Length: 92
Image (tube, rainbow, N blue to C red):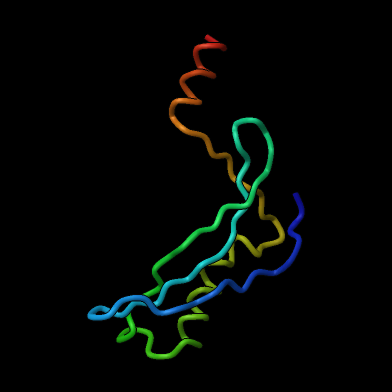
């Protein structure tokens, strides 16, 4: 599946005593049925002390998104353990 557009993600602050930068983006996954769907992912980028400005947090987010924005990106397969067991029983 070809990449539809370049992602920048969103970056925001979370917390009161320990303030952290959190990044949010979307990633394509292939389900057990073979259909592709988009899943929202969140990553902790660092603390406010470590990354004092939003621009620095956005730069770290760009490093996280480098794989998803690459030209050779392919969605990963995702399935639950129960689905794996059922599929295994049918094949074996």
